[in-house]
Image (cartoon, rainbow, N blue to C red; front, side, top):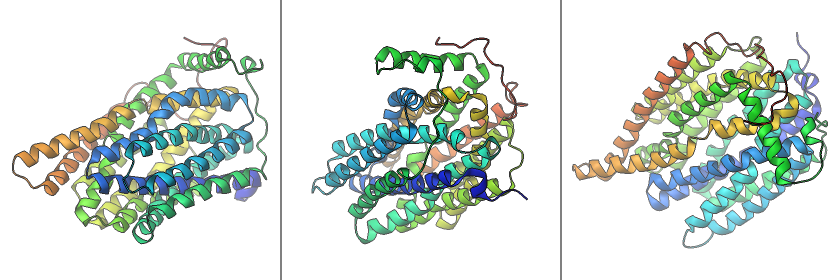
Length: 441
C-alpha cells in the first residue's frame, strides 16, 4: 500500500492545489457567464467565438516571455503578482457589464488583458510541481493539477448558469474577484522551493537581449529534440480540429432547449464530472503511464463522442453522456503526456520550453475560432436563403460542423497513432540529449 496522498506530495503542494482550484473555478464561471451574455445579446456564434479568441490570442505572444520570467524569478512571487492583477481586471470587467449598452469592444479588451496575465499561472504551476513533489508522485500531482479545470467544468457552469438566471452576471464576476484574492492569500503560507537555473539566466538585469537569449535557448532545445517538435505540430493540428467546434456547443444546447442556461450548465458540467472521476482513478490506479500511441487513440475516442455523437444527439441526457465519457478517459492521457514532457525537458528549461510548447500547441487556435464563427454564420445564411427558418438553420449548421470536424479529428488521431515516429514511444523513454547546450535556431 502506498503512502497517504499528503505524505507523497506534501502539505504545501496540497494547499497550493486547493487555492489554485478556487481561482480556476472563479475564472471558469466568468468565461461561462460572459459567453451566455454575448450570445443572448447578439444571437451570433461570431461574438461568442471572438470572446474565446481573445481568451487565447494574447497567450501566443506573452507565453514565450512568460516562460522566461518563470525560469528567471521566484515562482511564488509571480503567482502572487499575477493573481492580484487578475483580481483588478475582474473589477474592471464587472464595471463594464453593468453598463446599459453592452460594451463588447471593452469586454473583448479586458478578456485579452486577463488572458495575457493569466498566461503565467499554468506555466508556473507546471514548472513548480517538479520542485514540490518527488518524481514518483509526478503523475498523481499532474492529475490533481489537471483536476483544477475538471472541477471548474463541473461547478462553474452549474453555479454560473444558476447565478446568471437567479441574480445576474454581476454576482458571478464578484466571486471571480474573490477567488483570485483567496489564491493570493494562500500563497503567503506555502513554500515553493527555489529552482535550479540555467547558466544563461545567471546574469542580472531585465534587458530585452537577455530575454531573447533565454527564449532562443528554449527554441534551440526543441530543435535538438525533433520528436518533441513533431509532437507539438501534431498536437496543433488536433487542437485545431477540436477547437473549431468549441464555440458551437453552448449555442446548440441553448437553441435546442429554448435558452435554458441551467440545462446548459448541467450538460457542460458532465464533462468535468467525468474528468474528476477519471482523475481519481489515475491517482488510485495508474501504475504505468500510457504510450504516445495510446494517448492518440484516446483523442480519437473522445472525438467520436464529444464532436460526432454530441452533434447528432437531440436531448440533454445524451449530450451529458457524450461529454461525461471523454472526460472520464482524458486524465489518463493528460497525466501521461505531462510526465513525458517533465521527464524529457531539464528542470532549468521547463518554464521556457513549456511556454513554447503551449504557444505552438494553440498556434492554430485563433484561425479555428475565426473560422468557427464565419463558417457557422455562412452555413446558416445559406440555409435561410433556401427557405429554412433561422433557428433550424442554426441547428443544422452546428450539427454539420460538429460531425464533419469530428470525423477529421478521428482520422488524424488514428493516422498519428500508427505513424512510424510515435507508435512505439512510451512516456518514460529517454530522448537523445544534445551534445552541448543550444541557444537558438
